[in-house]
Length: 492
Ligand SMILES: [Zn+2]
Image (cartoon, rainbow, N blue to C red):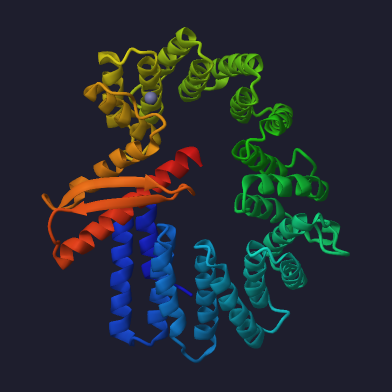
């Protein structure tokens, strides 16, 4: 299915122009309906494209509505039928993402039966319906049914030689781990998997682990699969296995498994040293210092930061040198060694020029916060925050942090640390205010739900016209998208 309108919209989205992307796709949909009719295959494709844009900006309810419209259009013929099956799977995926597992399961049962009728059980087209059904059954806790469907999808992709077998195997292993069952289906051996399919496995396992219901579960999955995959590929130093171990170390951080993470990073450092890859070795060393700090091994962390700084001086460059100094400085401030922290952070600022605005801005914010928390919220801290805010993207978490601290200095009150809602509200206001008509909006507020979802409050001063209402709606949704992306990019 070719969709030039969607491709253009995705380009706009990648360029950060999400509001334009949505408008472009909506215009293409109206045009498809006018040119080919409301009930045409072209119109269904356009609904699906619009849903893709909504999904990418995390607007699940709108994505679901658009996909329901796409699925409701039934046109005879092979291509329209295949496309409709895909739209239906997309619909189930969005329902699943929104936690509507029962609805997703119903859609997927209907979809799988239709796929069997259209493709037959041996065609990968059937597997593409079975795999998401297994994932939804897993999410519902129906493990036995999930395992059975997952096994069938593995068989379908394996026998038809389809690369998707990697993802299906990863899903199977994830479900099996819930039982304590072996990670591969009975009688299956990775030795029998052709090379091109085997090389899909590391990426598929990493992807599955990252979307597991919690990071600890993702760690367990990778830990079970790494020895099997290393044995099938070229051992522990195989670049694909190394990538998987990097993914593991990141998940171990998210799961607060810092002792395990230290081990993973030490193994990675050995690999990078054998490979003579100083850049990767330095990144792993920096990660190790943070993991040691989290594991409350302060002396080890300090020694590792020292080694990382020496390595950065040897062959790292200014950017990584600034990063090492900033992380080291933040670590010393956390353990209460403020004099050392201040010196390191000043060095971090001095290490880069204005040509590295993100590194420079982050170092300035770090020093400003250390000064302010040390009871020195004077002109220097305020100046650091002001210049950093200008350097950093408006939704950057460090810019959010700087705005909160600057406001506290100006108002003479305590800083916003520990009050993430106040900081997010500040950033949200900066994103929304300039883009809506003057005198229309009163108070703006962001609240965080217990699950970490952003909830927005917008007070309207007067009744907006229909056009103004649409503008506010769009500006607010896209501001939320930017905040989520900012949070994800820097903390995710
Ligand atoms: Zn603070």
